[in-house]
Length: 406
Image 1: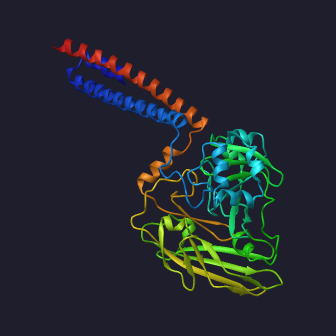
Image 2: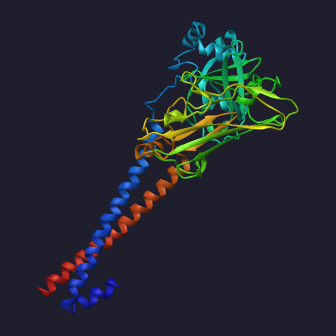
């Protein structure tokens, strides 16, 4: 088309204007292509910045989940924290039957290197039943849960199974060792929490009549637990929608006795993660423990074949907090409200734009995405060069035509 316009323009001055408009469109296209080149280059640069300087959360530690608040810098500091009075780290180690002598034999490495020499399926432990490592993807409530006890059962240490492949790129520093009871283990230096290759310390179902199993462990053939969440503002299942400011959510925890003996227990649910985005408005007959972030109902008996339901209502805060996601516990301020009763229940929160940007910038880039970004950048550069050459050619032709008619 451009060739016809140029040829005709040499014989018809009226077509000079058409050639001028065509050249103007080419100039605009060059500008747009140049902008695409800059944006694709910036996107690629941000990915490399993420690799070299990974994002660190301002909400770096958690008093609720960390075995050592603030973490440790060395093995010597870890042993000092173990020996200190009322040490939560010692309680955590005792719960997993890891001795001080075994801790003293640990050596520093990275989580990636430790996982490379151990089995792929590991158990991550924490003081909080709602816990996720920063490189661990969000998991459903079907994941395996474990419980270890210490200090005459007054200290609970919670674990869940993790696919080691999801942690395989993590450069987190750990102190690695071996325990005769728990097998190979690693201590995360930033939190003091442990990762083991064995769940032998799990106390669930070891005592069939122990009520701790009904609350803190996954379902067995002696009982079934089910947690449903209803957005009563819209009468929808809150687990499958993004819940917004001011929405009221009703949690219903059902526990059914599938055994031939009565179940005696004091039901309790952990809601610490819920309270990051919501406040309680109705707990019925229950009592809220602010220190443990637990809702506890009065002691009850569930007869064989019987099912009982325990409920409470929470309302989303206005405005929704934009606190940064935690680095030692990735469930902290992650735009999900997670509760725990025999397993994890996640509810999505519609977070403000700054939280969306945080999630995009903190996501670790993968090699395939970097490769795709390089391809996009190269294609945009080639298209920019091509259209720029065509634009310059038409510019020369337009000036030549103008001189002929002048």
